[in-house]
Image (cartoon, rainbow over all chains, first blue to last red; front, side, top):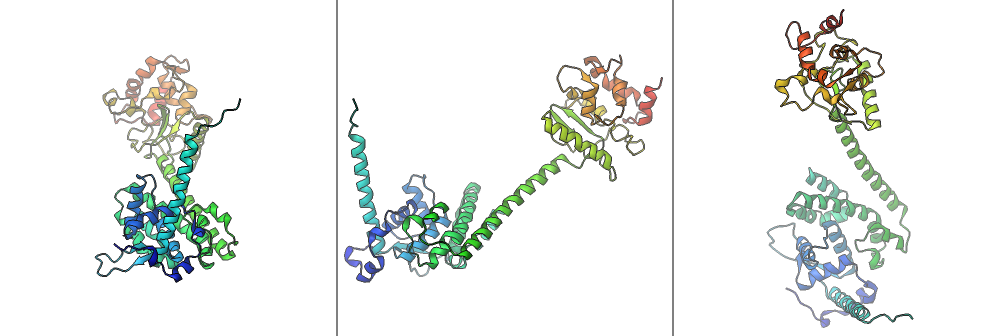
Length: 131
Length: 289
């Protein structure tokens, strides 16, 4: 498994990534794909299975949608193909997060965390009654 | 079949996408366990192909700089947020894809429609009756050149259909006991009620759910001339329902329960040569004073 730290993000990657906020908010499909790749590199079918597991089967990602998003994420430099030699099945390709992709995911999770916190506070605070 | 369709849909994707991800998509398809999963993958591939030829193609040319929200595999309506108008060629490809999808859909509807027509069978020439709310027809009486009976038969079918009085189904039951089958061919024989003798046979009642009482459209236990004619497609033809008058012993213009129950015995008694069929001559002889 490949791990990265903030220091692994090169200056050129940051230039390519531009402002991370431009990628936010992430769509559900993108968020699930990045989350699936956050732990380890996976092939397409593995990503689909992981997404289904993450959402308890409520969110099904089809290969058309998956590869459509992967294509775009690779263009944006958030995901890259992982080179593997000697694969048993040549059709399998593995993908992993780039440092920029990991940073984007981290910022998005922070944003979602804030959303969740605010949402919970709103729910807990009783509405003022109008007399 | 589904896999071929899936391969076809994968091939509909833009070349760059297809070369890059086509094998993987097929591999995932091959991993699908159930038919429902495969059908879902086919639908996904169809949407993906449409998306690639519409939303993605313009975006890829623009360098993938469109906003995230408009590019994340979301439905097509997100494309309204595109900062740049799609190129004419992209629109053309989208239109062609739409026409293709519509054509495939129409083709499917046409096939389904043809199947339904096939269910009706070849237009019968004599063996049809209403039973249990169904208009039942026999394929066996079909003869080339009987255009007039065919036209009349379909007119009756349309009438029943439009009035929702009966659901039209078919049967491939051979008209082995078709009345008048040995008589001369022509418009004088086609409307004679085939299958009746067979259907009324008490020995075979257990195997034949339909009976003459099925002609009783209003379920009053009696069969009127109109119900009889409707059952055999003789309404509006101006023909005399010979068999009806043979069975109508008291001549009141309706077949009572007793007359219905006695129908098989009466018809069988008319079969002089005992071949299990009633010819037009035998019927006419029965009506002769």
